[in-house]
Amino acid sequence: MENFYRDLVDSQQDLIVKFSPEGRLLFVNSAYCEILGKTREDLVGSVFMPVTAERYSDVIATQMTKLFRPPYSCIVEQWIQTPKGMRCISWSAKSILENDNSVMAIVATGRDVTRLKHELKVIQKKDDELMLVLESGNQMYYSHTLDHVMMFVSPRIRALLGCRLHAGKRVWTEYLTDNPVNAVGLERTIRAISSGRREPPYRLEMIGKDGRTIWVEVNEIPVVKNGKTVAIVGSMVDVTEKKLVEEALAEAEYIVRDFSSSKKRTAGRIPEVSTRSKGPLKYVRTLFSPKSDEEDEDFPEIPDNLNL
Image 1 (tube, rainbow, N blue to C red):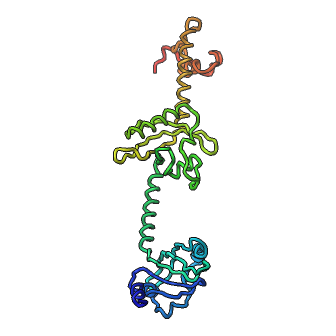
Image 2 (cartoon, rainbow, N blue to C red; image 1 turned 60 degrees about the vertical axis):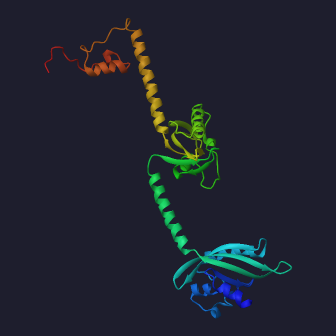
């Protein structure tokens, strides 16, 4: 029966080892010998998990302390040097306990996940490149749940509002001011969630961690699956400076309109300025400067009969 189980273990593609609480190998299967390019005689009695860098050793040692207290198991990744180069092995280890719950030995199964690690690295590189493209435009992207909890926030939005990367999930409405315009925007978001249809863009007044007021223009789309909205994704553009320009233009328009109305009311009491009796510069100064005609002597009049 012992030979049967030994043959069963040796035929496995996964790496299987048994080692003492002190870390000495007691048993290794053929797959473990093959990946290291060593014989069973060379490996039995040697130290398990030889690592090539101190940082890996510290991480593994920290994780393996779990083998000596409940639940007496752990999962670690180990990068080791093999005849085929550096390989990443994912180990799942479980302690064998005596009656007093002291650790008698540890059994671990390992799988070569090097290819998966490389694939994940390629995916991460593509994600970084995609994020670089997204962050190069004016739009800043985000997504949130139906309860307004932020799921994804682009780095530029975090920088704009002062959000920390690992601050935990937060509700985006926490960054809104009490400006009544925000109620309109929130209403459109709720309407998009309930209808599953895109709403027109809207503006929000937000406040960053530094207390600075920020105006953004929001354009969002509901994500619908099986006829039901499951999330909201969107983009926003910082329009703070644009908002200030619009307010300045509106104020200037009001001043000009008020000035025109005032001029009409006083037309009967103030002599009309003749553009023919004054040079072009004197006429402009008459409109926008409090100086009198006598102060404009340095601007000569243009005679009516001057041939140009």
